Length: 306
Ligand code: HSE
Image 1: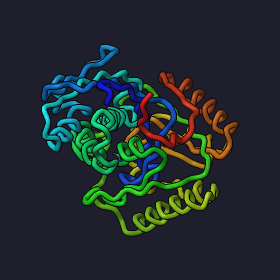
Image 2 (image 1 turned 90 degrees about the vertical axis):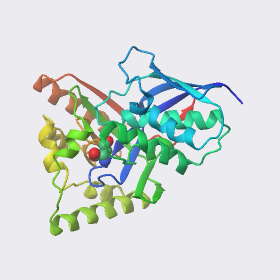
Image 3 (image 1 turned 180 degrees about the vertical axis):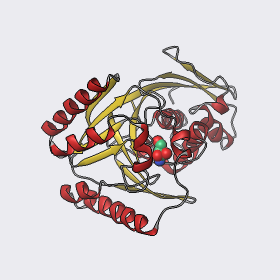
Image 4 (image 1 turned 120 degrees about the vertical axis):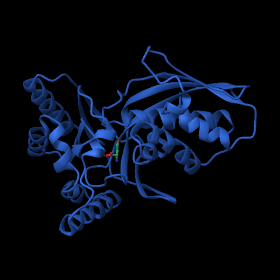
């Protein structure tokens, strides 16, 4: 068995507009790189390759907490050393904490001869999300581990469904402002009106059906969020403009990536995805806000050894 491996840990888009906490998609770019080594003493050491400040206590670290949970289920005198090359900025809405959590457990599992199932890995990885945002949610870690698009029907007990989908081009803009997931959850209303709930579950069902039936028009119609987006979009300058201009230019639809501030658009055509990128760039230039953009695709593999 190898003593050290290197993995790519991809960014993910949680919620997919209408599916708060239940839908997520894995991206080909951006991604973190992680080197994980097996140690012969029960310790966890985590460091950043780029001098990025990381919590030194593994229990407070999004990669460390999942490894602690994994080690509780291994009765052996082993530990892990993790070196993270962070390319997905924390607070970007692109699943930075999930990439660390999922990358750590997938890599550790490979070093241990694949003794845990993906469902076990997901169970461990959610402890990283708890460290990052105060709550366990699986809509970033599940697509990061399984790849593709995942539906998290339930986390207690875990019930994850990998969804097939037609080819999609994804445009992402990450305005360089930070939105903490914990803050973006705090501002949400605790109750929803029945009429809004009906719209929302119609859209979630429509989106899942659209993916499974390769029906682009149905995907587009279902990318609507009447519960979370009206509250969170207030935190994101340029939101309405980006969304309406991209849809006018032919995007199927899109919205806030995870808890923001990144925004994303799903597209049937690559050329439209590039047009969306130009629109996003123009909007944020005009607003005087630094940004990064990506035109990418759905990553079918999740965390992989490289
Ligand atoms: N579903 C979570 C949220 C994802 O929107 O708060 C955070 O990345």
